[in-house]
Image (tube, rainbow, N blue to C red; front, side):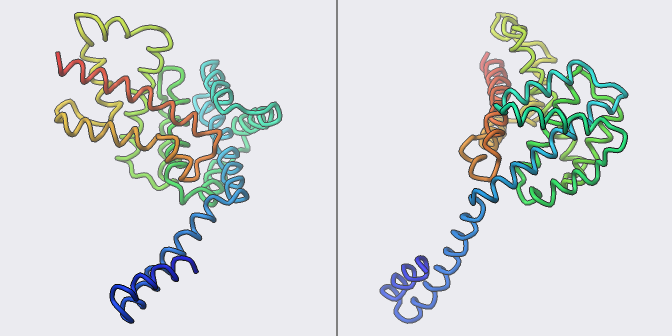
Length: 271
């Protein structure tokens, strides 16, 4: 009743009886919105979302890893890194490994797993995008996107409501962002980006792809794309939109690749 009472009083004081009616209606909408937010942040609901995400991401990672016929060491390492970043307990880590193995087994149902995820998390676009980002990242772990891996990813994206264009756009960005991540880990790229010769044409192309824009984009368009991506992975916004806590840190690490790509392009254009 808080919103109805306050808005109703303000409306009555400013506009009289008509203002009272308008204020009560506006207050009703406000109270309804607050109730929805309370439901979103309810501990039981959050635990349900976290469990649904956990139960989907690891078997799907296993399924994609096995798509080309074998699970490579790079794909195993990529999944283990995800577990470390999520700061899983020993019990949760064992469950994650078990789920990953389930995804590699012959009887695994892709449709049932994605359907269960959509049932619990389908209303949260951030969760759907984070799920896709990490599935795509694992597919690129060995440096290649195999035809069967792409087919599976496209099917999952379609089931999550992504158009083919949006899916291809996301794949391009994740692939390019992964390049910057690997370059920074190995120490490569830093010298060429900061040296007098400047970045190569391939590095620039990947930098633009990492931000999801074309090389012909204006400075203003480039900045808008950069800010939009940084906003999407901001920890406070992710936590407020229902993203599980153990995934917030993992998701925000994407900003490092985005920042690197943006800095590279800015430095090139300034030069």
